[in-house]
Length: 487
Image (cartoon, rainbow, N blue to C red; front, side, top):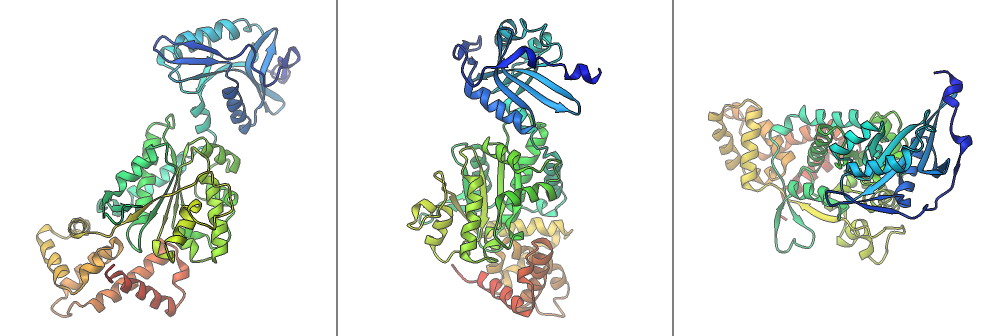
């Protein structure tokens, strides 16, 4: 097909009437009980704004030879133009064949002679039944749901695959222990909940949009974030994106040591980590506003210790911009000890409850808060056995290591924190093997822990701000010692 023929359009024969409802919205009852709406102006405008993000030029209520199509879209390709006539169908259920027959009879059919160079497209708010798809094929009408169009704005498949691969290749998944937490407002009653179950239910509940997971040093917040991101990514990839599932975006706030600009942060993350072809903030923003994303901001406290309080307030305002849309879903992790008191914690996670509110359109922002609990004795036992097996320690020798844990003074105090329990386990084989030559003491364990933790902080967590000399070695030693103090 030559360029002249591609350029040939219906534009000269049509006219855009504008954003007015021609004859009002038509509501049709479907055979299976749901209702469908044709000529719904709000839905037409939503589809129009979405297609314009792809680069289409769209006109609403486009008149051709006395027949009105909901949208007329054009997309320039070199010297040619891709054209599409679109009918928008809003429904509270899947679209059935009778609606497709109505669209064909009232619109696409009478215009068949005029649409020789344009494609015909039906866009549904919910999707199409299998019977409707057969009918669409019969009339040579292409079809998409609104979520189909949304999901193709940015292709996250490579990034989601990397989230899954990172978790599946990490040995920690073999000895991960389900975590426990206390809910905000229920800490006095000591009501303990299963953390992973709560987070999964939070993701599914569209009435809740913001969650803060607060846990002390080494309690597993980052590991939990990675697990949740992997689970969500696997589900999404399994369904090939054609689903209402949210796309997980995991962002490590500990990498930022200055004032945030949320637009620059997102564009950089899309480019450097997600490796997408079109790292555009406006596309990301549209997907977030439409409820397609699950944003996981890990390490709020790690960012906070690098900046002053005024900069911190500026940064949280930036995060609020992504948390404020009604369909947004945001999870933030942090250490509670960063905050001097509950008032400061409220200022960040429930700004409307404090006198000095953060000056931003918060749109009713309130972060539900969960407080991660350290391991109890049962969790320590389970973790110990799983971790030793991952190190190829024979089952017959595991009681020997449990005995060392029981008999070494205050070792169980350290073992309540997953990161320190892991260090204890990794230290065990060497210490038990040479027990006759070297008495096991807390000092020896502390020394081993600190060297290992310095490596973990610099290599795995990239917290170089903790690792600049002897002063910070002492600070880290103090942190570990504080971990053993009773609450």
